[in-house]
Image 1 (tube, rainbow, N blue to C red):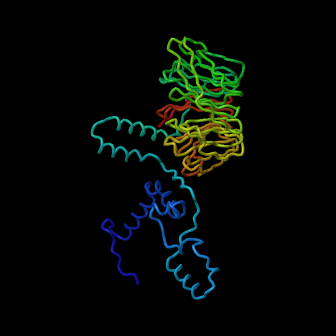
Image 2: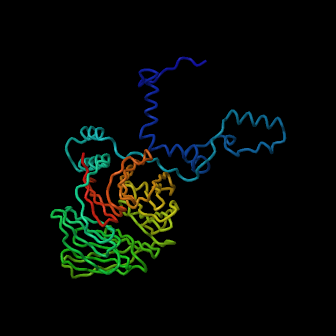
Length: 445
Protein backbone atom coordinates (compact mmCIF):
# COMPACT_ATOMS: atom_id res chain seq x y z
CA UNK A 1 0.00 0.00 0.00
CA UNK A 2 1.11 3.52 -0.77
CA UNK A 3 -0.08 5.92 1.86
CA UNK A 4 -1.23 9.52 1.32
CA UNK A 5 1.24 11.67 -0.61
CA UNK A 6 2.13 15.11 0.67
CA UNK A 7 2.44 17.59 -2.21
CA UNK A 8 5.13 20.28 -2.19
CA UNK A 9 4.04 23.83 -1.25
CA UNK A 10 4.14 25.03 -4.88
CA UNK A 11 1.48 22.52 -6.01
CA UNK A 12 -2.17 23.47 -5.46
CA UNK A 13 -3.49 20.00 -6.38
CA UNK A 14 -2.34 16.65 -7.79
CA UNK A 15 -3.25 17.89 -11.27
CA UNK A 16 -1.26 21.10 -10.72
CA UNK A 17 1.72 19.04 -9.52
CA UNK A 18 1.63 16.90 -12.66
CA UNK A 19 1.22 19.90 -14.98
CA UNK A 20 4.10 21.85 -13.41
CA UNK A 21 6.33 18.77 -13.46
CA UNK A 22 5.52 18.26 -17.14
CA UNK A 23 6.20 21.95 -17.91
CA UNK A 24 9.53 21.74 -16.10
CA UNK A 25 10.62 18.61 -17.99
CA UNK A 26 9.64 20.23 -21.31
CA UNK A 27 11.25 23.57 -20.46
CA UNK A 28 14.06 25.13 -22.49
CA UNK A 29 16.38 24.73 -19.48
CA UNK A 30 15.98 20.95 -19.53
CA UNK A 31 16.37 20.90 -23.33
CA UNK A 32 19.59 22.91 -23.08
CA UNK A 33 21.04 20.55 -20.42
CA UNK A 34 19.63 17.23 -21.64
CA UNK A 35 22.97 16.24 -23.18
CA UNK A 36 24.60 16.42 -19.73
CA UNK A 37 22.15 13.80 -18.42
CA UNK A 38 22.83 11.62 -21.49
CA UNK A 39 26.58 11.88 -20.77
CA UNK A 40 25.97 10.51 -17.24
CA UNK A 41 23.50 7.74 -18.05
CA UNK A 42 24.48 6.54 -21.53
CA UNK A 43 27.65 8.45 -22.35
CA UNK A 44 31.29 9.08 -21.59
CA UNK A 45 30.69 9.90 -17.90
CA UNK A 46 29.17 6.48 -17.21
CA UNK A 47 32.49 4.68 -16.68
CA UNK A 48 36.13 5.40 -15.98
CA UNK A 49 37.81 8.60 -14.81
CA UNK A 50 35.04 10.91 -16.04
CA UNK A 51 32.50 8.92 -14.01
CA UNK A 52 34.64 9.25 -10.87
CA UNK A 53 35.01 13.01 -11.45
CA UNK A 54 31.24 13.34 -11.84
CA UNK A 55 30.54 11.24 -8.68
CA UNK A 56 28.67 8.86 -10.96
CA UNK A 57 29.92 5.46 -9.75
CA UNK A 58 27.88 2.44 -8.66
CA UNK A 59 28.46 -1.07 -7.42
CA UNK A 60 30.65 -3.07 -9.88
CA UNK A 61 27.95 -5.70 -10.33
CA UNK A 62 25.57 -3.12 -11.88
CA UNK A 63 27.73 -2.55 -14.97
CA UNK A 64 27.35 -4.51 -18.17
CA UNK A 65 30.12 -7.12 -18.25
CA UNK A 66 30.93 -6.49 -14.58
CA UNK A 67 30.85 -10.19 -13.86
CA UNK A 68 30.86 -13.31 -16.04
CA UNK A 69 28.21 -15.56 -14.51
CA UNK A 70 29.13 -18.43 -16.83
CA UNK A 71 32.60 -18.59 -15.29
CA UNK A 72 31.17 -19.21 -11.78
CA UNK A 73 30.99 -22.98 -11.23
CA UNK A 74 29.62 -23.03 -7.65
CA UNK A 75 25.78 -22.95 -8.03
CA UNK A 76 25.27 -21.31 -4.60
CA UNK A 77 27.76 -18.56 -5.44
CA UNK A 78 26.05 -18.02 -8.81
CA UNK A 79 22.60 -17.71 -7.17
CA UNK A 80 24.02 -15.28 -4.57
CA UNK A 81 25.56 -13.18 -7.33
CA UNK A 82 22.30 -13.12 -9.30
CA UNK A 83 20.38 -12.01 -6.19
CA UNK A 84 22.89 -9.17 -5.64
CA UNK A 85 22.53 -8.03 -9.28
CA UNK A 86 18.74 -8.05 -8.93
CA UNK A 87 19.02 -6.03 -5.70
CA UNK A 88 21.39 -3.43 -7.10
CA UNK A 89 19.73 -3.04 -10.50
CA UNK A 90 21.67 -2.55 -13.74
CA UNK A 91 23.22 0.49 -15.39
CA UNK A 92 22.21 0.98 -19.05
CA UNK A 93 24.44 -0.03 -21.92
CA UNK A 94 27.06 2.64 -22.66
CA UNK A 95 26.18 4.11 -26.05
CA UNK A 96 28.61 7.07 -26.39
CA UNK A 97 32.25 7.56 -25.52
CA UNK A 98 32.46 11.27 -26.46
CA UNK A 99 30.39 14.24 -25.17
CA UNK A 100 26.89 14.23 -26.60
CA UNK A 101 25.90 17.26 -28.73
CA UNK A 102 23.66 19.86 -27.15
CA UNK A 103 20.12 19.83 -28.42
CA UNK A 104 19.14 22.51 -30.95
CA UNK A 105 16.80 24.85 -29.09
CA UNK A 106 15.36 28.27 -29.96
CA UNK A 107 18.05 30.77 -29.00
CA UNK A 108 15.86 33.70 -28.01
CA UNK A 109 12.98 34.12 -25.60
CA UNK A 110 9.66 35.34 -26.93
CA UNK A 111 9.52 39.06 -27.47
CA UNK A 112 6.97 39.60 -24.72
CA UNK A 113 9.14 37.79 -22.18
CA UNK A 114 12.24 39.67 -23.24
CA UNK A 115 10.48 43.04 -23.14
CA UNK A 116 9.15 42.41 -19.62
CA UNK A 117 12.57 41.29 -18.49
CA UNK A 118 14.25 44.38 -19.94
CA UNK A 119 11.72 46.71 -18.37
CA UNK A 120 12.29 45.30 -14.90
CA UNK A 121 16.07 44.98 -15.09
CA UNK A 122 17.20 47.95 -17.17
CA UNK A 123 15.63 51.15 -15.87
CA UNK A 124 17.47 53.34 -18.34
CA UNK A 125 18.49 52.49 -21.89
CA UNK A 126 22.14 51.50 -22.10
CA UNK A 127 24.42 49.45 -24.30
CA UNK A 128 23.05 46.16 -23.06
CA UNK A 129 19.40 47.07 -23.63
CA UNK A 130 20.30 48.37 -27.11
CA UNK A 131 21.85 44.98 -27.92
CA UNK A 132 18.73 43.30 -26.58
CA UNK A 133 16.60 45.43 -28.90
CA UNK A 134 18.84 44.56 -31.84
CA UNK A 135 18.47 40.85 -31.04
CA UNK A 136 14.71 41.35 -30.66
CA UNK A 137 14.48 42.92 -34.11
CA UNK A 138 16.45 40.01 -35.60
CA UNK A 139 14.25 37.48 -33.81
CA UNK A 140 11.12 39.26 -35.05
CA UNK A 141 12.50 39.32 -38.59
CA UNK A 142 13.34 35.61 -38.61
CA UNK A 143 9.98 34.68 -37.13
CA UNK A 144 8.39 36.47 -40.12
CA UNK A 145 10.88 35.32 -42.76
CA UNK A 146 8.10 33.61 -44.73
CA UNK A 147 6.52 37.04 -45.36
CA UNK A 148 9.18 38.07 -47.87
CA UNK A 149 7.91 40.39 -50.59
CA UNK A 150 9.69 40.93 -53.90
CA UNK A 151 10.36 44.67 -54.34
CA UNK A 152 12.17 44.79 -57.67
CA UNK A 153 14.38 42.79 -59.99
CA UNK A 154 17.11 43.74 -62.44
CA UNK A 155 18.93 41.82 -65.16
CA UNK A 156 22.45 43.26 -65.25
CA UNK A 157 24.60 40.25 -66.19
CA UNK A 158 24.94 37.97 -69.22
CA UNK A 159 25.54 34.80 -67.19
CA UNK A 160 24.70 33.46 -63.71
CA UNK A 161 25.24 35.81 -60.74
CA UNK A 162 27.84 34.34 -58.35
CA UNK A 163 28.33 36.91 -55.58
CA UNK A 164 26.65 39.88 -53.88
CA UNK A 165 28.19 42.60 -51.67
CA UNK A 166 26.45 45.74 -50.41
CA UNK A 167 27.83 49.00 -49.04
CA UNK A 168 27.14 49.84 -45.39
CA UNK A 169 24.51 52.46 -46.25
CA UNK A 170 22.82 50.04 -48.64
CA UNK A 171 23.03 52.38 -51.62
CA UNK A 172 25.54 50.46 -53.77
CA UNK A 173 25.24 46.78 -54.72
CA UNK A 174 28.24 44.92 -56.17
CA UNK A 175 27.76 41.64 -58.03
CA UNK A 176 30.03 39.13 -59.73
CA UNK A 177 29.06 36.74 -62.50
CA UNK A 178 30.23 33.89 -64.66
CA UNK A 179 30.26 36.47 -67.47
CA UNK A 180 33.61 37.59 -65.93
CA UNK A 181 32.35 41.03 -64.83
CA UNK A 182 32.06 42.89 -61.55
CA UNK A 183 29.07 45.24 -61.63
CA UNK A 184 28.25 48.23 -59.43
CA UNK A 185 24.52 48.96 -59.23
CA UNK A 186 22.82 51.95 -57.58
CA UNK A 187 19.83 50.87 -55.53
CA UNK A 188 18.43 54.42 -55.43
CA UNK A 189 18.63 55.29 -59.11
CA UNK A 190 18.14 51.67 -60.28
CA UNK A 191 21.03 52.31 -62.63
CA UNK A 192 24.09 50.28 -63.49
CA UNK A 193 27.02 52.53 -62.54
CA UNK A 194 30.08 50.44 -63.44
CA UNK A 195 31.06 47.25 -65.20
CA UNK A 196 34.60 45.94 -64.65
CA UNK A 197 36.33 42.98 -66.25
CA UNK A 198 39.65 41.64 -64.91
CA UNK A 199 40.08 38.71 -67.32
CA UNK A 200 37.93 36.57 -69.62
CA UNK A 201 37.32 33.97 -66.88
CA UNK A 202 34.30 33.73 -64.57
CA UNK A 203 34.27 35.55 -61.23
CA UNK A 204 33.10 33.34 -58.34
CA UNK A 205 32.46 35.65 -55.36
CA UNK A 206 32.96 39.18 -54.05
CA UNK A 207 33.14 41.13 -50.79
CA UNK A 208 33.61 44.71 -49.62
CA UNK A 209 36.47 45.62 -47.30
CA UNK A 210 35.64 47.67 -44.17
CA UNK A 211 35.25 51.30 -45.12
CA UNK A 212 33.61 50.44 -48.47
CA UNK A 213 36.65 51.70 -50.42
CA UNK A 214 37.74 48.39 -51.95
CA UNK A 215 35.83 45.44 -53.40
CA UNK A 216 37.55 42.05 -53.76
CA UNK A 217 36.61 39.44 -56.37
CA UNK A 218 37.73 35.83 -56.73
CA UNK A 219 38.18 34.37 -60.19
CA UNK A 220 38.38 31.07 -62.04
CA UNK A 221 41.71 32.32 -63.43
CA UNK A 222 43.33 31.40 -60.05
CA UNK A 223 43.54 35.05 -58.90
CA UNK A 224 41.92 37.39 -56.38
CA UNK A 225 41.40 40.96 -57.63
CA UNK A 226 41.27 44.18 -55.55
CA UNK A 227 39.30 47.04 -57.08
CA UNK A 228 39.41 50.63 -55.75
CA UNK A 229 35.91 52.10 -55.86
CA UNK A 230 37.11 55.69 -55.38
CA UNK A 231 39.73 55.53 -58.15
CA UNK A 232 37.82 53.19 -60.44
CA UNK A 233 40.68 50.86 -61.18
CA UNK A 234 42.20 47.52 -60.29
CA UNK A 235 44.42 48.13 -57.29
CA UNK A 236 46.10 44.76 -56.90
CA UNK A 237 46.08 41.10 -57.90
CA UNK A 238 46.80 38.20 -55.56
CA UNK A 239 48.09 35.22 -57.55
CA UNK A 240 47.79 32.72 -54.75
CA UNK A 241 46.41 29.47 -56.19
CA UNK A 242 47.06 26.83 -58.85
CA UNK A 243 43.41 26.48 -59.86
CA UNK A 244 40.16 28.45 -59.76
CA UNK A 245 39.41 30.43 -56.59
CA UNK A 246 35.90 29.36 -55.55
CA UNK A 247 35.16 31.57 -52.52
CA UNK A 248 36.74 34.31 -50.39
CA UNK A 249 36.14 35.65 -46.87
CA UNK A 250 37.68 38.59 -45.00
CA UNK A 251 38.01 39.39 -41.31
CA UNK A 252 40.38 41.62 -39.32
CA UNK A 253 42.90 42.18 -42.14
CA UNK A 254 42.95 38.51 -43.04
CA UNK A 255 41.87 37.08 -46.36
CA UNK A 256 40.65 33.48 -46.61
CA UNK A 257 40.62 31.96 -50.10
CA UNK A 258 39.26 28.56 -51.16
CA UNK A 259 40.31 26.91 -54.39
CA UNK A 260 39.83 23.95 -56.67
CA UNK A 261 43.54 23.27 -56.08
CA UNK A 262 42.40 21.51 -52.84
CA UNK A 263 43.55 24.25 -50.47
CA UNK A 264 42.20 27.02 -48.32
CA UNK A 265 44.81 29.72 -47.73
CA UNK A 266 44.93 32.33 -45.00
CA UNK A 267 46.63 35.61 -45.93
CA UNK A 268 47.69 38.54 -43.80
CA UNK A 269 46.49 41.55 -45.73
CA UNK A 270 47.52 45.16 -45.22
CA UNK A 271 44.81 47.33 -46.83
CA UNK A 272 45.95 49.93 -49.32
CA UNK A 273 46.19 53.56 -48.26
CA UNK A 274 43.25 55.80 -49.07
CA UNK A 275 45.22 57.39 -51.88
CA UNK A 276 45.00 54.16 -53.79
CA UNK A 277 48.67 54.31 -54.75
CA UNK A 278 50.03 51.76 -52.29
CA UNK A 279 49.52 48.12 -53.18
CA UNK A 280 48.31 45.43 -50.79
CA UNK A 281 51.01 43.38 -49.11
CA UNK A 282 50.13 39.74 -48.49
CA UNK A 283 51.87 37.03 -46.52
CA UNK A 284 50.48 33.51 -46.38
CA UNK A 285 49.86 32.61 -42.72
CA UNK A 286 48.43 29.13 -43.17
CA UNK A 287 47.47 26.56 -45.77
CA UNK A 288 44.59 24.20 -44.97
CA UNK A 289 45.07 21.17 -47.20
CA UNK A 290 42.20 19.04 -48.51
CA UNK A 291 42.07 15.86 -50.57
CA UNK A 292 39.92 17.37 -53.35
CA UNK A 293 38.61 20.69 -54.69
CA UNK A 294 37.15 23.09 -52.14
CA UNK A 295 33.88 24.62 -53.37
CA UNK A 296 32.85 26.80 -50.42
CA UNK A 297 34.08 28.25 -47.12
CA UNK A 298 32.61 30.29 -44.27
CA UNK A 299 33.85 31.76 -40.97
CA UNK A 300 32.19 31.73 -37.57
CA UNK A 301 31.29 35.05 -35.92
CA UNK A 302 34.59 35.31 -34.02
CA UNK A 303 36.66 34.09 -37.01
CA UNK A 304 38.26 31.39 -34.85
CA UNK A 305 36.70 28.57 -36.88
CA UNK A 306 36.33 27.91 -40.60
CA UNK A 307 34.08 25.42 -42.36
CA UNK A 308 34.88 24.15 -45.85
CA UNK A 309 32.85 22.04 -48.25
CA UNK A 310 34.42 19.89 -50.97
CA UNK A 311 33.31 18.60 -54.36
CA UNK A 312 33.17 15.04 -52.98
CA UNK A 313 30.71 15.83 -50.17
CA UNK A 314 32.98 16.36 -47.15
CA UNK A 315 32.38 19.13 -44.62
CA UNK A 316 35.54 20.11 -42.74
CA UNK A 317 35.70 22.19 -39.56
CA UNK A 318 39.04 23.94 -38.91
CA UNK A 319 40.51 25.64 -35.85
CA UNK A 320 42.08 28.81 -37.26
CA UNK A 321 44.09 29.53 -34.11
CA UNK A 322 46.17 26.40 -34.74
CA UNK A 323 45.40 25.86 -38.46
CA UNK A 324 44.36 22.27 -37.72
CA UNK A 325 41.35 20.21 -38.76
CA UNK A 326 38.90 19.49 -35.94
CA UNK A 327 36.47 17.30 -37.87
CA UNK A 328 35.90 15.89 -41.33
CA UNK A 329 32.31 14.78 -41.89
CA UNK A 330 31.42 12.87 -45.06
CA UNK A 331 27.75 13.84 -45.06
CA UNK A 332 26.90 14.48 -48.73
CA UNK A 333 27.00 12.08 -51.68
CA UNK A 334 27.99 14.85 -54.10
CA UNK A 335 29.50 18.36 -54.04
CA UNK A 336 28.74 20.62 -51.09
CA UNK A 337 26.86 23.70 -52.32
CA UNK A 338 27.08 25.87 -49.20
CA UNK A 339 28.04 25.65 -45.51
CA UNK A 340 27.83 28.13 -42.63
CA UNK A 341 28.02 28.35 -38.83
CA UNK A 342 25.07 29.23 -36.62
CA UNK A 343 25.38 32.65 -34.92
CA UNK A 344 26.46 30.98 -31.64
CA UNK A 345 29.04 28.77 -33.47
CA UNK A 346 27.54 25.62 -31.95
CA UNK A 347 26.35 24.15 -35.23
CA UNK A 348 27.19 24.04 -38.92
CA UNK A 349 24.54 23.76 -41.62
CA UNK A 350 25.47 22.37 -45.03
CA UNK A 351 23.60 21.84 -48.29
CA UNK A 352 24.63 19.61 -51.16
CA UNK A 353 23.81 18.67 -54.71
CA UNK A 354 22.32 15.47 -53.24
CA UNK A 355 19.42 17.58 -51.88
CA UNK A 356 20.37 17.05 -48.23
CA UNK A 357 20.27 19.80 -45.61
CA UNK A 358 22.51 18.68 -42.74
CA UNK A 359 23.17 20.05 -39.25
CA UNK A 360 26.50 19.17 -37.60
CA UNK A 361 27.51 19.66 -33.97
CA UNK A 362 30.75 21.67 -33.96
CA UNK A 363 32.08 20.31 -30.65
CA UNK A 364 31.76 16.63 -31.52
CA UNK A 365 31.59 16.63 -35.31
CA UNK A 366 28.42 14.53 -35.14
CA UNK A 367 25.70 14.76 -37.79
CA UNK A 368 22.68 15.55 -35.61
CA UNK A 369 20.02 16.30 -38.21
CA UNK A 370 19.49 15.59 -41.90
CA UNK A 371 16.58 16.70 -44.04
CA UNK A 372 16.02 16.03 -47.72
CA UNK A 373 14.55 18.12 -50.48
CA UNK A 374 13.75 16.96 -53.99
CA UNK A 375 16.37 19.32 -55.44
CA UNK A 376 19.70 20.89 -54.42
CA UNK A 377 19.66 23.97 -52.17
CA UNK A 378 22.38 26.06 -53.80
CA UNK A 379 22.76 28.73 -51.10
CA UNK A 380 21.22 29.72 -47.77
CA UNK A 381 21.20 31.99 -44.74
CA UNK A 382 20.13 30.89 -41.24
CA UNK A 383 19.80 32.05 -37.63
CA UNK A 384 20.41 28.68 -35.96
CA UNK A 385 16.72 27.67 -35.97
CA UNK A 386 15.28 28.74 -39.31
CA UNK A 387 16.83 28.46 -42.77
CA UNK A 388 16.09 30.47 -45.91
CA UNK A 389 17.55 28.59 -48.87
CA UNK A 390 17.76 29.19 -52.60
CA UNK A 391 16.82 26.12 -54.60
CA UNK A 392 17.85 24.73 -57.98
CA UNK A 393 14.38 25.52 -59.38
CA UNK A 394 14.52 29.18 -58.32
CA UNK A 395 12.25 28.99 -55.27
CA UNK A 396 13.19 30.34 -51.86
CA UNK A 397 12.42 27.74 -49.18
CA UNK A 398 11.87 28.42 -45.47
CA UNK A 399 12.97 25.46 -43.31
CA UNK A 400 11.84 24.88 -39.73
CA UNK A 401 14.78 22.95 -38.26
CA UNK A 402 13.04 22.15 -34.98
CA UNK A 403 10.03 20.77 -36.82
CA UNK A 404 12.23 19.17 -39.49
CA UNK A 405 10.13 20.43 -42.39
CA UNK A 406 9.78 23.03 -45.15
CA UNK A 407 7.32 25.62 -43.84
CA UNK A 408 7.10 27.94 -46.87
CA UNK A 409 7.91 28.08 -50.58
CA UNK A 410 8.38 31.49 -52.20
CA UNK A 411 8.48 31.93 -55.98
CA UNK A 412 11.67 33.65 -57.08
CA UNK A 413 14.08 33.17 -59.98
CA UNK A 414 13.62 31.36 -63.29
CA UNK A 415 16.51 28.99 -62.74
CA UNK A 416 18.70 28.22 -59.75
CA UNK A 417 19.18 30.73 -56.94
CA UNK A 418 22.98 30.96 -56.86
CA UNK A 419 23.74 33.50 -54.09
CA UNK A 420 21.95 35.26 -51.26
CA UNK A 421 22.72 38.31 -49.08
CA UNK A 422 20.98 39.60 -45.94
CA UNK A 423 21.53 42.90 -44.13
CA UNK A 424 22.53 43.03 -40.46
CA UNK A 425 19.00 43.88 -39.30
CA UNK A 426 17.70 40.81 -41.19
CA UNK A 427 15.03 42.95 -42.89
CA UNK A 428 16.39 43.18 -46.43
CA UNK A 429 17.50 40.33 -48.73
CA UNK A 430 19.07 40.25 -52.19
CA UNK A 431 19.28 37.09 -54.29
CA UNK A 432 21.14 36.32 -57.52
CA UNK A 433 20.33 33.59 -59.98
CA UNK A 434 21.16 31.62 -63.07
CA UNK A 435 18.55 33.78 -64.83
CA UNK A 436 21.17 36.61 -64.64
CA UNK A 437 18.90 38.64 -62.37
CA UNK A 438 19.29 40.16 -58.92
CA UNK A 439 16.11 40.37 -56.85
CA UNK A 440 15.47 42.75 -53.96
CA UNK A 441 13.25 41.41 -51.16
CA UNK A 442 11.74 43.09 -48.07
CA UNK A 443 10.11 41.61 -45.00
CA UNK A 444 6.50 42.82 -44.68
CA UNK A 445 5.06 42.42 -41.18
